[in-house]
Image (cartoon, rainbow, N blue to C red; front, side):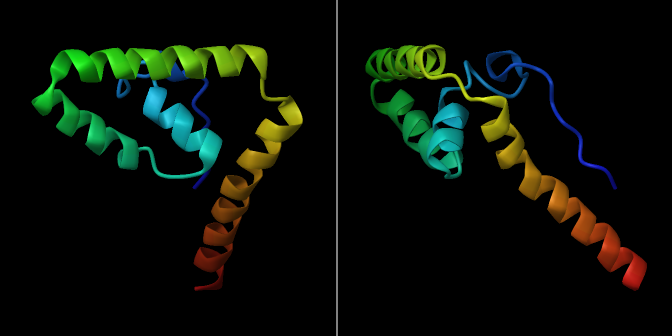
Length: 96
């Protein structure tokens, strides 16, 4: 199987709302669900405060992405392990 790259920009993906949690997860290297759960719980507690916090963090993420864009080399380096994992899977399938 070949890996598929998603050329759609992060905020335009159908399964995200502005992509804030996913962007922070990508930047710091952890699962974005760890941020989505507290935001979801916060909506139950105080929707307006949680929405304001989410939009504020979204502005910070946007500013950091505009001020410090990722270089193509860094993006290619982060995509390389996914390609290697796909190659390992195909090698294991061929070996079996």
